[in-house]
Image 1 (tube, helix red, strand yellow):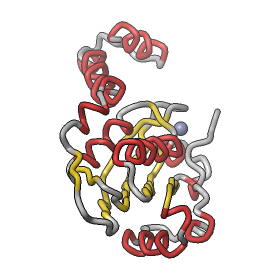
Image 2 (cartoon, rainbow, N blue to C red):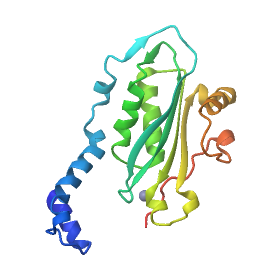
Image 3 (cartoon, rainbow, N blue to C red):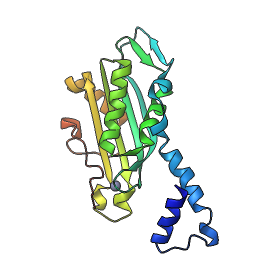
Image 4 (cartoon, rainbow, N blue to C red):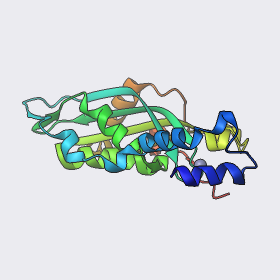
Length: 201
Ligand SMILES: [Zn+2]
């Protein structure tokens, strides 16, 4: 990877041997290795021993989970807050595992819609709850930094399963509790995902 970063610096018109850039390939490799460490994480292992059988069927919410990811179209960051809720059937998951799970999927090259779905699907498949909801709000630097449609550089996506999909009341309760930073028209009714990074240019 370091050789590639060096070539990239040259292609950008830089001198990779000047003092400030000498260690840049090494640093960038280290940074990218960390930022994509989700590819090498084992979900089963992350969630191992964290499922507990309980007699509890009220909504569990973990909100305002900070996340940082990289858009797969530009390799630029998108970051924001993730809100997760589920209604247990027979099992709950250790609360600290939910932010870990978000990190596992965020630390990959992503689009916000897929990231949202992967978190929801994984909770659905492992916890088998009566319902699960994930809402993500993020700023996309590939849009805000490049000055492309500035008003759309903030995107909200959602994934709903089970009770959150079937019951408007359950969905509303969740949305009330997380109090979205942005009032996204249509989200409350249709829960249609906002537009994340869609640029191919
Ligand atoms: Zn992008």
